[in-house]
Amino acid sequence: MKLRPISESWHRIERWLQDRERLRELAPPAAGQDIARIAERLGVNLHPDHMQLLLGHNGSGSFTLPPYYEILSTNEVVDAWRIKTDVWADHPHSPYRPHWVPFASDRAGGVLYLDVSRPDEHIGAHDREGSSLLSSHSMWASLPSLMHYTADALESGHVLDRYRRPSDEDGFLLWEVFPDAADN
Image (cartoon, rainbow, N blue to C red):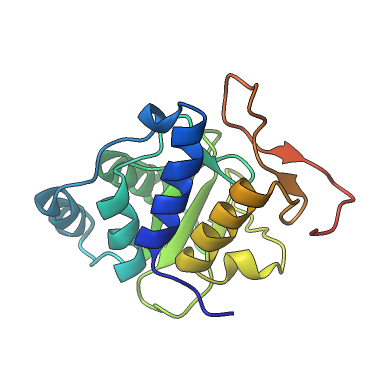
């Protein structure tokens, strides 16, 4: 499958939110200097896909990526990275690496990250216990893939890797979990 740019997926997600009068849930785009400040504070360059994500919206507000990850703002990226690297710094075989830059959080100590030292790597996940568990679904192959599959699932209502889009009636934009479901 040919993936479209992250900006196109953002437009599709924005349309879905607009149709539900929820577009205000998303933050405005990040400024270039805010993105540059991340690289300066972390001492690593951001992954190009991460930059594109932030240029779309500097955080996701109450909108979540499947199943429950909020996109981090530029300030939140720095905070989450510092917490992860500080917590795991004293472990001799740390399960978190400084070149893993978080882009989304479950707000319970877990993050989705991109490895800036290996730009072709899949999306990684790191929970508060140091584990990294994601399914083998192709949505986790890259950030453009995750955004594309998210937009498709929102538009179609189909189950995506055991998750179905938020209900139009829900006050919060949380994905429903179907543990035994296959993709439609």
